[in-house]
Image (cartoon, rainbow, N blue to C red; front, side):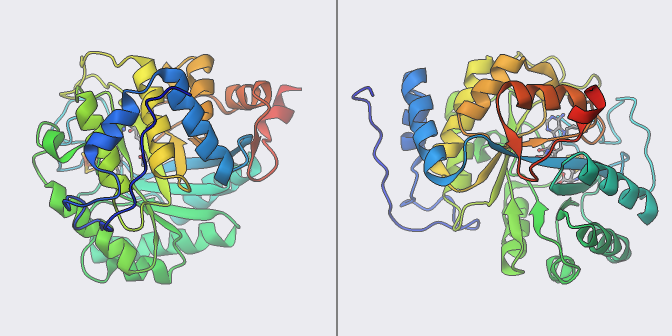
Amino acid sequence: MSSQVVEFFPAAKATAANANAAESRWPVEQVAALFALPFSDLLYRAQQTHRAHFDPTEVELATLLSVKTGGCAEDCGYCPQAARYDTGVTAQKILPLDTVLEHAREAKAHGATRFCMGAAWREPKERDLDQIEAMVRGVKALGLETCVTLGMLGDGQAERLKGAGLDYYNHNIDTAPEFYDKVITTRDYQNRLDTLGRVRDAGLKVCCGGIVGMGESRLQRAGRVAQLANMDPYPESVPVNHLVQVEGTPLHGTDPLDPLEFIRTIAVARITMPKARVRLSAGRRQMSDAVQALCFMAGANSIFYGDKLLTTGNPEVQADAVLLDKLGMHSRSGHVDARCELE
Ligand code: SAM
Ligand code: DTB
Ligand code: SF4
């Protein structure tokens, strides 16, 4: 290993609410120093961390379903579901329970262990939550882990979801605080931390990550990872999304990110959040098998699995089964059923 070893400084604890604390476990400079390591040293460190906590051949398969699509009032510059951008996404009402359960059953049959339901809301209304609670109960009863992402939560809403049996709430910080207002203006960074605090207080597990490739600097990428790693505790689940550029959104046409930089981001997330499920999330359809393989070597151990993300495409289930087989990797459930369809 090179002499550029970066020390780990356990210091004062930071929470979602005080992630900017002066004394944090992972000062931004330390995280930036990880980013700057020679690629092979960075991957070596990430591998060591990964292997200390996980079976490196095991991957979590999480299937996504958009249970309420489009027509969103927010202005997130990356998002095809924002009503104000002309992206071709047709707004749809909340899906009926039986349709959701049908998708969940299919996901389970294909080997998924987690089912994530997303809604294009700024925040859920109380009556929306009645329907979401029924979905959570139904999906949970199928033996799947449940996750929902519904936007900002108000008082008592996280407790309602916990009561329905929800395992994870996904709410991303998306990017570094310094870059945030270049991407979203209709809600601020503190709103996100407040929701994450409510999720934690209700005893739910936190799924929180962000998007890479929105034109942020490397220091800002390091800043985002530091924000997550300094939460106390850090999120159990960390989705690392590569921006999916959608025509009609303000971020369409952003200069493409070097894939090696995306892999570095995964490795730094793994090192700074050793026990988290680091998910190689949106953007896989645009990545070669070799880039994805390096992401797994860098410590990713979860993927979105299914032909669709929320509104955009994801690799075909069959293609993923072939890729995992070529890499000698297996699902947490022990099976990836799509392989049978190939024979
Ligand atoms: N409306 C809710 C919210 O914003 O919290 C939940 C759904 S929203 C689509 C969930 C996350 O998807 C966003 O926070 C963002 O990180 C990710 N996302 C949305 N559009 C994306 C895109 N084009 N590329 C990559 N990630 C994207
Ligand atoms: C997350 O971090 N990524 C997922 C999930 N959480 C909800 C969403 C990705 C969306 C990509 C764009 C789309 O398909 O609409
Ligand atoms: Fe709405 Fe969520 Fe898309 Fe933002 S990311 S526009 S809140 S659906």
